[in-house]
Image 1 (cartoon, helix red, strand yellow):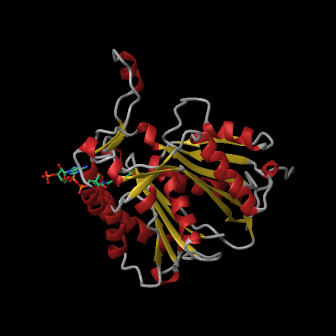
Image 2: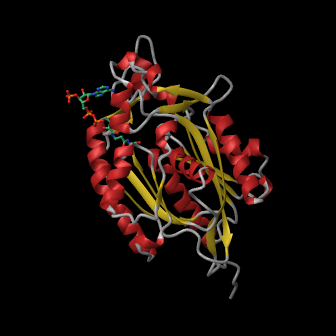
Length: 333
Ligand code: UT7
């Protein structure tokens, strides 16, 4: 009997390298408050955000994704030609089709890899890491480039009091490849479609076309609903992730949650009873909430600040529109 179809057993996967790119324009709260009748004090107290990064004149989703991907490849010592698949998590690529991943794969000089975008909003990066982990472990791919990239300044209303101050622009990328030891734990993920409308594109594209003077749809959000869901439900998901991975909270070094709101981060840390030694990502203060890009950007900041080092165990947890969530433990490169 033929044995042509061989499924490798015992292959592990790990994150091999990380790269990021932040929007270059620094936008302080003072620049936004007049249009939403707010104050620097209110924004800092309710969200922990002092300033955010938006794209400068020569930047967009493609330039940020490309820069982050090139940095991730260099950090991994993996050539673009070795990449078997490119997965981009984004909710701000404005082409319905083709994917940003296909364009990025071409610009990077890869050799015709599988390339596709996924739509899981702020939870997209952890979804993509979970998919890439399974692809490498099953033998579907050897090296997978995972990118979280967002240009939210373009899809944020300057006059919406609930969102104008929250979002930022940036991209983060990791290369995931084979490893002798497990480097990525099982993903715990899910969605609550009953809260489908809690974070949404303000207007369906069909309705945009029906407008007399069509304008770009914005991200709309029932902030308090999302806040309550995230603050109370996500700590349970984080604990389930540790349980599924088979480690105790004392064994993690880094907690890298989606950078949605500093108060949500604090509430989760309290609910999980994180030990003193666990370093907590707080990139949101001067980057803003960058949706699918926020976890890799926050991890990069931890390296830059000397809080993360190679080999640390990090608990990642992402959540957002859907409402959807995904979490896993990774050993950082
Ligand atoms: O990344 C995807 C996931 N997203 C999130 O996780 C975001 C979750 N939500 C949040 O981060 C928070 O809900 C916000 C930061 C968006 C808002 O904070 P909040 O504490 O939930 O404020 P709120 O909407 O409950 O409003 C509280 C008060 C209201 O006034 P009264 O009724 O108490 O007098 C609002 O009118 O604050 C007022 N308010 C503002 N005041 C100054 C609302 N927006 C503003 C504003 N400036 N921008």
